[in-house]
Image (tube, rainbow, N blue to C red; front, top):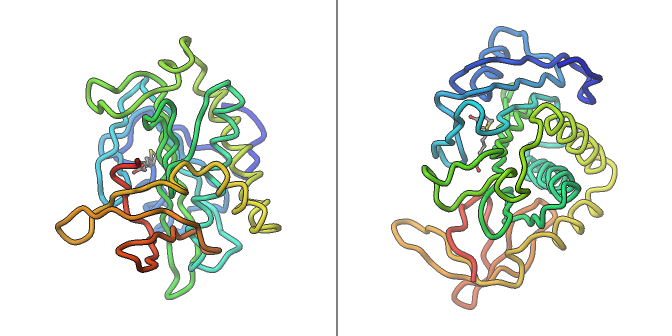
Length: 245
Ligand code: BTN
């Protein structure tokens, strides 16, 4: 792919890899990870989702990539990078005509089904956040034989789209939102809130061995979800929301 990458670094395009996140970690360990490196794979053998879940990443089925960059934010605000990346991807999917929304913290849904997942991981030098690995998986073709609750760009649009074009748009859009976050986090958060489908709804999540229900009421300045649970305010950091009513 030959184009001006907004992240300012060449793009690494791999046929197959275990996980683009792992590839970024390997480059980092060897001192070869440049600020703004994009690693894009056609297929991932061990694609990772949040909370150690598997992420199905078959060849030809989606866009799987990691952007590795040096964040200009303290590590406590890593969650805000998920938030700005979600908005960047939402902008692109809506630009294609899809009625997409965000399920906190960083799942993108269309027709109530997941079309995109984002995994943000930090690489630390001691206590200091050195790199952010922003991993994005967008389903382009149907994966509903394996994951019934998922959808894809092609299923929703009714026609296929070029993965390179989509990658280019997403990289530009996410880059723009990350820079906006550094300049005006309040504006990004407020836009995120108005597109976050869980606010004002009942949500369930796993707590210990049980699933509990609470009311999603707000998102705090660090990007955490504030819920009302058993008449008490409770803060969720990165829990997976199982159901929304
Ligand atoms: C989630 O919704 O749980 C996050 C999914 C993130 C998947 C992407 S695909 C590219 C990158 N490499 C990985 O192994 N995972 C992320």
